Length: 433
Image (spheres, rainbow, N blue to C red):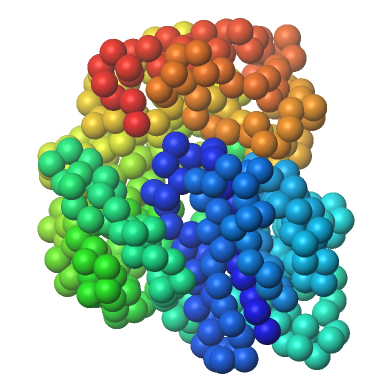
């Protein structure tokens, strides 16, 4: 059976090859381990290809696999329509956040979908295709033991699509690097996030982390890593030490992200000793009230202390900020700039609130005094605007009522003005990420 995993163009990213398709490569590796030569596996990489030319890069397969996020669903639907024209007998299977949130709608596009984690489900789907008894919906109950599965092999892509420079910044920017993911799950429930796996964070065993990095060094000459884990420095001391020491054994340099609260200074020191050069910290807002409303569960005073600890250890810190949150003050731009000047980050990624399907603000906007504009196409659901082009504007995703549960609602014009003011400051100080 010929099975191909189809990627999208990645046109929402300035550099679509910067982030490896770890999930698809991981599932292809699992299928190879399970079925061996019963499957001819292929990764169909459409990154960087104009959408109207995509079909010319799609070879005929018996089964096409798709990982679906909400902003990409329209492009995937158009791709599948074209594929069905040329290869009408092919079967299309899908999983991912969008199919979890919109299962019934997804079945209008795909022949079968996976709800939940996909490691066991993808094997069941393929077995059922062999046996000619494919069902419409497959559900994974419970959580997956990550240590039961191999790390993702990169052999399904050319080396040129795996290893690249620029994973790290400043003096390390010329090191060849790639992206990795060693954990899954998030125990938090921020109201702006569509967390699909709300559970204690599961981290791969230290020896498996070391094995994967050594494989990347050996096969691709990797010298730097971008960790895509929610917690590159874990708040659990024992978990953090195991993960960091596993990375440290390889002599690799890396950057990742972490919570703003809960990381002990000794663990920050260990991160530095094991190759960490930059940590992204999702402060989200400099308004404690807005953070509390969004159930972020961080304390800004402690967050400032953490950022200073990073700086003392010589670890660059990148701030992740969102404007337009419920309950933020009218002078949020002024407060944000003052916060940035105080903590001195290496760079800042600034977003405007986007009501992601599956999040609490999407499901219950009235709770926050919001009205969601359901006419905005999902393709417009982007999170960072105006970083490089001051004329780039965000679509009107939502608007606040004049009176919200948290006081006077801010108009979209006010939110955009605040965003522009902070973005102009970041450009002036060359802090834009």
